[in-house]
Image 1: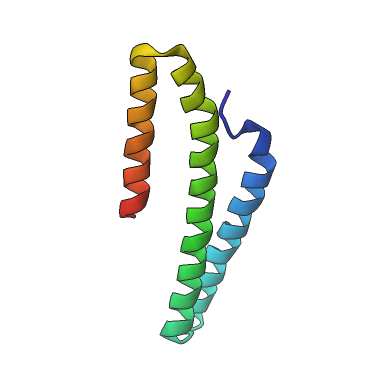
Image 2: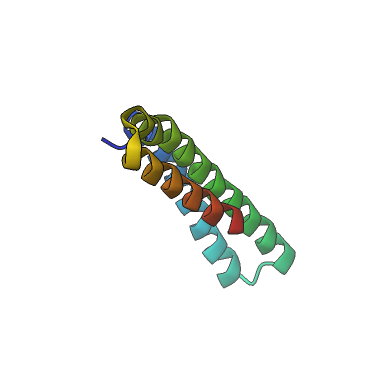
Length: 93
């Protein structure tokens, strides 16, 4: 079971909101909206996606990584490494 399963509806609601923001961006570009206004909305959509990513990461750490650490050994090492790679990917984006 995924760590975010209990928050699935909440996450889907947030993702639908981001989807709406992206559609709004498309409309803004189609309407030749001023560049800075479009960039402001791009920033807002980016922050919204980052918030979803952080929530997923928190759930992963609390559920999947914590469970693997309880098992110990190579499983724990692999999950910690996997989380570290995911964090690095998020930081670079």
